[in-house]
Length: 422
Ligand code: NAD
Image 1 (cartoon, rainbow, N blue to C red):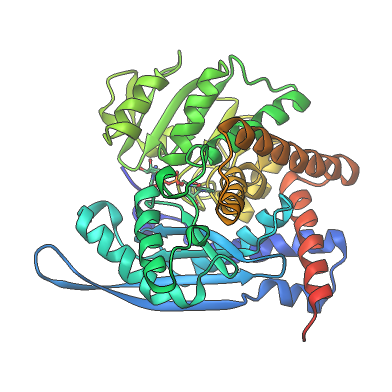
Image 2 (cartoon, helix red, strand yellow):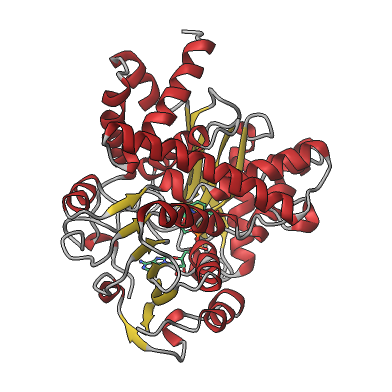
């Protein structure tokens, strides 16, 4: 069962990222003025999204687009539809995108958007209406050289297709204005599974350097959507045992390893719940955190690893943040004291935005790449970022998040300084 909002630790993702920034800023010696500059978003757009529902009622949802920084290139970041979306959450996620694009050294800044809506309860027509109304209201700040949306929680290729259509109907055919599109509308081969693939590359690199193997190891994944399901398939192919997974309705556990190809078909393709799957035993979302494993992968919501919920007892060697802002600052400290490595979101789940960048370049050049090229270049990007972070972890004795952020902060602050204008 999903954990109701009131019971979740309501630590805003903006607070999480502000807290993280100070630790890394100390490491690279950023002055106060630069810290203030980097903490402050460039633009915050808040809109109403009125939609005529199927039963004739008019609903008015809230929507947000936050552009945190465009110092290194156009703002870039996903759009999520979820009841917990608010301005603070979107701001925190937009900030993380700035660090992520800088760490991966792609020419983008950071943005995020969202509509506060229970997307799962919407019909397809209502989902399209929410997407189009939201796009109309934020279109003025979008564009291939301004701000480029992509999919995130509860948004997918179809949602990106509607977004593209709505945007292009204003300014003319502009495929580079949005990424994560269907292939037939200019999407990139490999984009759909790119985030999961990037998480897998990060785990492979860590396995090679840490002595925690992937093959034969036990993996637990919270969330079986785009990221979680695609990651599970790839890890299964590498010989890892996925012993437990969950989605919003509950989870399944099998200590011999779940039948991942069948589960993928059941959930990702046939859109059924993980808990209905006929393999292993049923577990609740809270029981998932108690399953012993080597690799624990949150791939659903933010703030899920916290003191209040589970950080004291999760039984793993590595936490891999496939979800953004998955660990709270205190959760982070507890995991560190317990010698559990946290591979942070800005490194681990960056594969999606890397292939979004490839998609954007393919659109601008009107020249699609073969899948092998996409995956090979993704691998190179992920490995380069991993090694840069690892070097700082080893040289400075800091954790992976601080090391990753330190690299990002130096790149973004340099771009801000060189551009000046204040
Ligand atoms: P998705 O909507 O495709 O899947 C989300 C999954 O999480 C679903 O299986 C859903 O049932 C599950 N879930 C939701 N609430 C849950 C709960 N309370 N307990 C357990 N499971 C729950 O979304 P996605 O694109 O896979 O994104 C997942 C996470 O990865 C998000 O944090 C997102 O920001 C992050 N992310 C996604 C991308 C991308 O390219 N899609 C890129 C980077 C980061």
